[in-house]
Structure formats: structure tokens, C-alpha cells
Image (tube, rainbow, N blue to C red; front, top):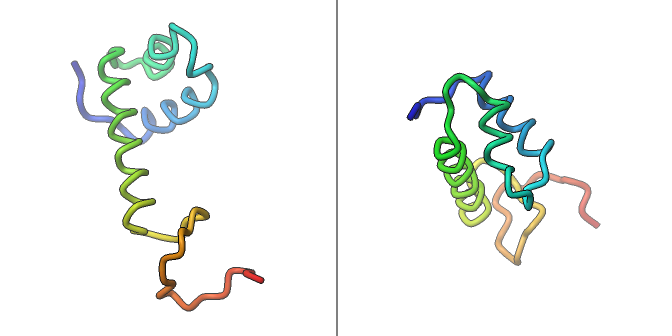
Length: 84
């Protein structure tokens, strides 16, 4: 099982996530095949779970930027982003 991901593998991974039907039974096999370089179905599942976790943390904590899913939190940035 290969645990480190190169920049190129991450890009191929991102494209493959959007290319294949996530509800298809062979989704993870297809993504693993696209990424190649010895990545297994388990590698892909783990990498996707980590990505989802990171995105959830960003949305929850507001780290690293703004979210379109503002649920009444305070805005500390003071920037104008076209709000009415």
C-alpha cells in the first residue's frame, strides 16, 4: 500500500473523482486505475476520506478562506465580496 501522494497523483485523483459516477460499484477501482502508480482501492478510499475530513474542517472552522455556507457567523475579514 502506497501512502504518499505526489502533486501529479493528487491532480489525477481530483479529475477522476469528477469523471466517474460516485454511486457506481466500480467507482474506487476506476479512480485507483486512473491514478495508477501502485495506488490501491484502499489507498483511494483513505485519501478520499482524508480529503472529505479536511474540507469538513475548513467549513466548520472557517480556516483558510470564506465559505458560501455562512451560517450566521461573524465576519472578521472586513472585505467586500459583493454582498447586498
